[in-house]
Image (cartoon, rainbow, N blue to C red; front, side):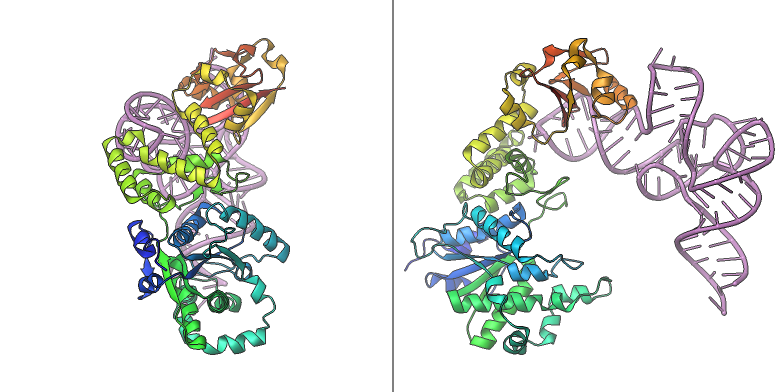
Amino acid sequence: MRMVSNFVEELQWRGMLHDIMPGTEEHLQEGMHSAYVGIDPTADSLHIGHLVGVMMLRHFQRAGHRPIALVGGATGMIGDPSGKSAERNLLDETTLRHNQEALKSQLARFLDFDSNADNAAILVNNYDWMKSFSFLDFIRDVGKHITVNYMMAKDSVRKRLSEESNEGMSFTEFSYQLVQGYDFLHLYRSHQCTLQMGGSDQWGNITTGTELIRRIDGGKGFALTCPLITKADGTKFGKTESGNVWLDAGRTSPYKFYQYWMNTSDADAEKYIKIFTLLGRDEIETLVAEHSQAPHQRALQRRLAREITTMVHSREDLERAELASEILFGKATAEALKALDQATFMEVFEGVPQARLSREDLADGLDMIAALSARTGFLKSNGEARRELGQNAISVNKNKVDEAYRITADDLISDRFVLLQRGKKNYFVLMVD
RNA sequence: GGGGAGAUACUCAAGCGGCCAACGAGGACAGACUGUAAAUCUGUUGGUUUUCACCUUCGCAGGUUCGAAUCCUGCUCUCCCCA
């Protein structure tokens, strides 16, 4: 069987290749193989930090191979010491199963689980084969083959044992790499899985797996890692002030999701569009050229945000997010705002802090100090309200106002809302009951 | 156990009897500029107040004084040096 495309080459030009075990590329050229990526089921949704691994699996499947998503039910109960400075919280089984189901439905947007193709994706959970593994069996059948010296040499372990770490490391955490390593061996046996992929911080854990395969079964496992995703400004990828950027619409609204990508810096956008979209090389090069001609158009960011939002959510969600963005950041005027119906308005301003007013409050016109502070709590004090008004920072329904302005029933959008704004980005909604 | 230094607003850090809601720097917020960016410039950064003024705040509790972040007493905590 001829491979559709060269997987390794694909990852390489996309900047998704960090480290690769010698011989991996040749091995994959031989024909269809299986590879897996581990995902911690710590929540019932993926966040965008998981996306790199998922995209690796996706490319793998597109290249004609079989991707395996491994839900780390067992390993999630232990906690990977890599990059962690302290022990992890443990999960109970009910939560674990719930999370697994949720993750699978999200993964299905990226991977083909259902088709009859012989490279259909598979989802496995290492809890299923680890739960009945007795401690004695484990240390006899697995632990026997790996020396503590070997385990101690791993970066993840060394760091925790070094001077800087005052946390100490439990035996549980220490065993983590063995459990993860055994996963690889298990999949090697049960699914002929010969490759494990992951972030570059996983290299140590992955090689423990290949080592087990070599020592116990005399087989050959391969390893491939991608660079950890960084941001040009040094802040953590996938985080906002309000926490992780989740794929689940209930946790991170499609609008916020879209905005996260839209706000990436120029340098990062070029990197991300290669990693997180399936756009081809030529198309990306054209986009990059376009972007450098007219960076203010943000063509890269826009395309990036569109592609990912559509992939993760839907075309309709994307359209709503774009509409919302247009209203919030575009040239939208009071007229455009007032044209919104109630449902759309709520959608656009979902998550924006709000206060309720009664209709009587507006009867004689509500003065700005009351609207900003005393009656609503938008600003901390009347003094602050005065200052901001004096600085020309306050808008009502997108129009700058001064202290003399009074809000009346005429300002209501779809007879219900008034949009207050401090500066460009701080919104507050008044709801009239 | 002995000796010394210190505790000031989000952070660092001045002030050492009235001119102190408290210098300055960072941060944060806003305005101009801009690409929903970066840089830059400007303003704001305890509360009530148009202003004046008043109230609360300089580790905690008392005291001296017309008046205290500043002086005194006690307490709590931190750091350093010597045992």
